[in-house]
Image (cartoon, rainbow, N blue to C red; front, top):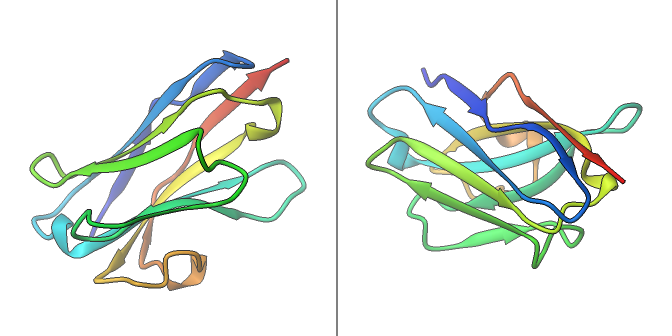
Amino acid sequence: QVQLVESGGGLVQAGGSLRLSCAASGRTFSSYSMGWFRQAPGKEREFVAAIRWSGSSTYYADSVKGRFTISRDNAKNTAYLQMNSLKPEDTAVYYCAAQFAGTYYYTGYKYDYWGQGTQVTVSS
């Protein structure tokens, strides 16, 4: 069992930055690929970014490529999402998710555990 807790969301002006954190419980964090997804009001959940369990590979949605960076610190059981050059269309609830030894990075239902989400609001 893995519990995920997101933090770092908030209100920011367009062009600003935020860093989201996802703290995981358990001693097998390094065996899980981690993903970030988001859901805006009235829209479906969408993939944002993912990082392989080893940290050797990262994956991004086209809409955030070049602006967002996903990383992980296995010693701290934590994954991060650094978000720069934020736009109003980035406004959403952001969720982190964990997939055991996962390779289905873009597919939400393949993830085994989800956090409760953190709100990110970008004002214009």
